Each structure stands twice: as structure tokens, then as C-alpha cells.
Image: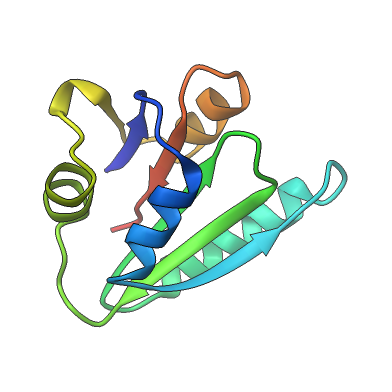
Length: 116
């Protein structure tokens, strides 16, 4: 299930908090390479072992891949417990394109992409 973060958060805080529990790799793109890089990123996310999620944020031309060998509940442990998001601050979708599209349209601060 993909998570859409509607409440504003400092991007640095989101990244640095996530890096405390996960290894991070970023995929940088520009206007011409976005779709190609997104495909590469989604493939890496699908092939990641353990707990893995992708992150896409407003005004940052990067997809981030976070991985951990440990089992971590991203919504509960990271977003709610560590970053103090309430369930009302989040929306959920099965479609991996929705978080990216909402961030690009300025209707969300960030999107968490998870492939089961």
C-alpha cells in the first residue's frame, strides 16, 4: 500500500530520520529522464529484500530507495511514532503513480511507495 503524506514536513527531517533505520540510495532525474529513472527505481524497489520503500518529495528531482534487513512497519514505526504523523495526515492508494502525481501537482508533500 502506498502512502501519501499530506501534512508539511521538512524534507531534511524526513530523509535523516529514515536514514537512521534504513540504507538509502537515490535516483536523480531531470525533465527528460524522469520516466526512465522512475522505471529503474521501481524495478530496484520491487527487487529489494527485507523492508523497503520508495520516497518521492515535492521540489526534489530524486526518487529515494530505503532498505533494511529488519522488519519495520513504515506507517506505524517511522511515520507515526518517529515523525509524529497522525492517520489524518496520510492517505493510502494501491496505485504507485498516484503519490508521484499528487506530489507533482502540489497536492501532497511526499509519497511513500511500497511494492509487496
